Length: 350
Ligand SMILES: Cc1cc2nc3c(=O)[nH]c(=O)nc-3n(C[C@H](O)[C@H](O)[C@H](O)COP(=O)(O)OP(=O)(O)OC[C@H]3O[C@@H](n4cnc5c(N)ncnc54)[C@H](O)[C@@H]3O)c2cc1C
Image (cartoon, rainbow, N blue to C red; front, side, top):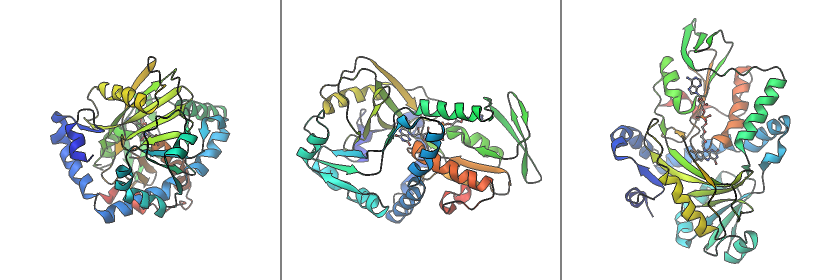
């Protein structure tokens, strides 16, 4: 099924609210320009250069925070209901191999052996090696914050509402809880980045690809692996808190209220895939994926401001890119050479 059909289907994986379309259009046109093959190859290679450092950057932090139990790296299973969907993904899978990922192609019987709780509806699967998942990103963040505090770090919860620049540096960060004279400022404010970037003279084409998930607390049927059901564009993950089904892209802006019907769609799809799934106890969530048109994050020093650094725009892949981004930012803040070439992630690229 192509994008045009998805847009016509209110339950499809891509939805643009009619009233938001005129505002989304300039971003969509830039996004479409990035679908040229040469750009796709360039952007995929740049994403991979960062994300291949995920596990080796994340695990030292996870161990430092004492929560190794939260990270599982047994691989992931990418499932196709129809063989033609698999064949339609030839370019994507070719890019996986080109970027150093490896996978086995499984048939129906092999899928059943690996995931006995799944309905026997899948023709093909890829077992992707080296990938994994976090069983509870919230507990991971809490554990990291607690360890930082134990080591003497201070976490101040405040809203930044002004940045004062003097002599090519940020001299003051104004917040609703007072003013701070910083040595270095890392701006990582997700979808709200535009406001702070504007204060430094940057107009960033950032759009929220809003997404939804449901977490089923007492699911009955649980997959052994993290599953990507590629015909349906959803991810099913065994979490510490139950089974999570996530997906969908909705363009509706930063302020529109969530439409939780888009999350409830996952319950029906989930039952088709995991026939034993009990969905009575579930929670729903909507979040923002801050996306630039080229699907690459912005990482690096702010032009002309010696002590300001950007780290935002990781889109669909923030947990994946967070630890390598933190590592690169720590390297450049402390004057070391970054472990990767930061040219593709410049803020002034646009
Ligand atoms: C349904 C769904 C599924 C996803 N699944 C995955 C996945 O499987 N793997 C993956 O890697 N990624 C996934 N993502 C993407 C990931 O969640 C996002 O990319 C990520 O949350 C963005 O992180 P961020 O830190 O850039 O922004 P945010 O998480 O939005 O954090 C920005 C922070 O900045 C704060 N802030 C903003 N402005 C100010 C200000 N002026 N002063 C002070 N603070 C401010 C905000 O309060 C917020 O806490 C998913 C997203 C969705 C929606």
